[in-house]
Length: 410
Ligand code: PLP
Image (tube, rainbow, N blue to C red; front, side, top):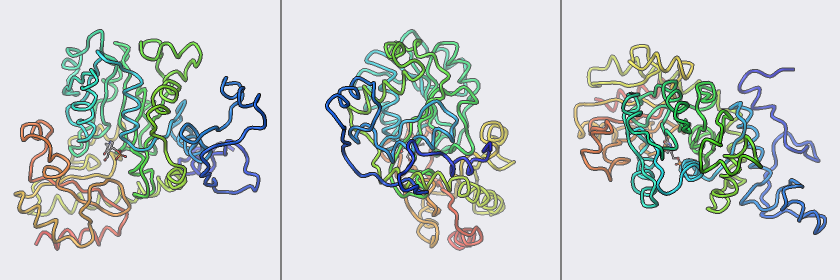
């Protein structure tokens, strides 16, 4: 029977090999290495003629099952699981660029992604040309013969801007560029990048997909819509690996050699996380809507941002790209930094912590934390002021969260 619902698919992805005990849960394979029956069989494996797990830094059964499940849920052509969201981003960029190349990126990015591009990769001769991604002209002006990719976040964290993904896809196609989306904030039950021309999605599975802050992980999702001959850094992989050229380059030339594999225990948690993802996102979303209405009406709250609210200027884009669910992060402003601190210190249910999409609601003051290493000029350019807080909405009873906020505002 055809399975159409997200959770139905999640619960019914077959294992790569049937379990000898017919276990309903994917067992946790903690083994580092796997044995072969003969020297000839190992040789055949190393020649690529006999496919089997060899050494768990490269592949392992529990991680493979997580990849298969995410592949089914993203309707993509391939998935690689890695050790963190940052590893997913790094592996992807290293595979499609080399010294002397450049990429175009939005100037509003998760802080460590910005630091990776601005500070780390620039030391290896990769230039990032930051641009206002809302302006097609600005992007076009930055592209030259060494440009390899456009990199963006589906919903920026913490500004909650939504990219015009179809425009980015059009520009990327025209110039033969890889369109890379960090879709961490908009998980696969609300966003499918392949439908809008995204080539590669990178995700921090630490967030929603871990099932609620259980473990660190990342995923690279290839939507199979790019001709890898158009990128000079992947072209040599196309003859042998055809449509899988990119993921095979990542596997063979980046991920394996830099050592950022996902741990089997992590995969075990995250397999479970995928099973309950849709339920959790729906609950967080309903909480966001109720919280948004409450906050908009509160006299001490100056501005509220959640693109899932009909009154938000980004609501039409949230409808178009995310079925109306632009993740479940909100931001709001009080009158001053001191007011934010006083408010945060009085909270009893919402936790003061730097993470997203836990089951618990989490709050942070981005200006003094995630953006602490930025100059004031950089913060302002990134849309961060010291009156703003980011709230990652959890699955608690919404009446309790509202009561917590109301009491802390007094
Ligand atoms: N991308 C976004 C949008 C994030 O918010 C984060 C972390 O908060 C990351 C990437 C990095 O993920 P990880 O902490 O799993 O490396």
